[in-house]
Amino acid sequence: MAKSKKNVLDFELHLKSVEENFEMIQVLDEDGKVVNEDLLPDLKDEELVSLFEDMLWSRALNDRSTILARQGRLGFFGPTAGQEASQIGSYYAFDKGDILFPGYRDIPQLVLHGLPLDKAFLWSRGHVLGNDYPETLNAMPPQIIIGAQYIQAIGAGLGLKKRGKKQVSFTYTGDGGSSQGDFYEGINTGGAFKVNTVFFIQNNGYAISTPRHKQSAANTLAQKAAAAGIPGFQVDGMDALAVYAVSKAAREWSIAGNGPVLIETITSRFGAHSMSGDDPKRYRTQADMDAWDKKDPLIRMRKYLVAKGLWDEEKEDEVVARYDEEIVEAVAKADAAPKQKVSEFLESMFETADPITQEQIDKYKAKEGK
Figure 1 (tube, rainbow, N blue to C red):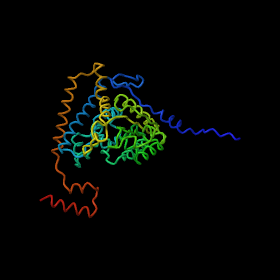
Figure 2: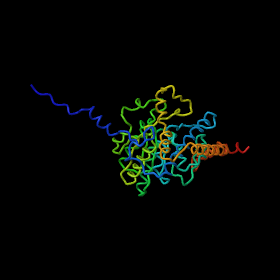
Figure 3: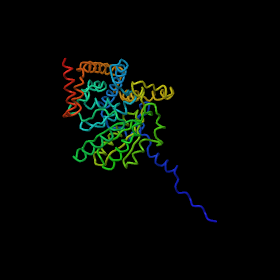
């Protein structure tokens, strides 16, 4: 009687072996205690304080923007509360010469990179001046098309590589963006040409109301990097120091000519997807939201700094009050921007208008001049 052949294709074991290579990286736990000394970044005390201050600024900006949106004084606004470690912690690993390709939720990084805050408010309102960037700002306007910034980023990364620049492009999308075709084309092409680019997936668990487990069967989103032949890491996105450490190492890897890196940050969006009618209470449980509230990145970083004698409540009150004043001033400046005209919309469509568009421009100018 013939013996049956041993099944050497153990699919479950294969999947497990792949997924075990993507454990979440953490430096600070929820109590602000260091749990990984080896990855603790070598940041000076003043740099740690500056990082936390910018995280506080981002939360203040989120809170003020939420009020403005409810008042009808903003156009589109995507809340950022809860993602300060993911956004600000990662941004701190880059410099002004690096080229930022933000998604529509990445306004904090864009402002820190050099966009005047009043222009950020104008962008939200759809005002053309919101896209009028200073020449020294190495960034593109926030991308509305989900995942399209990945394609743009690899183009810039390839250009930096060909010119021998020790700079990178860096870009962000959400967990939903990692299901888009542009995402796969971006990481695949980036890997093939070894471009100077760092990719971020901010995994906040929901693409609007679609939960993460319904978007992809992959156990992690970081493991998608393997198909493109590039390194992928999953990091605690509520831990600013862990995000900074991984992002800094990724930048150094990329500018050394090794190609791109994909980083998945596990984070949470405390508020709605946007202020356009989304209600997270319809698809998230209260227990889930309460659990994430305890992981608040501001609480974690604050405890760490207090333990080091670098922070106190009085200092925080002063910093937040100053930020509130700056934000109010930026809103006032945005409010004072000139009203847009139809002729201006048409003029900004082309560098040189075609005859039909020029005819429309002339017609509207005549009307607007009355």
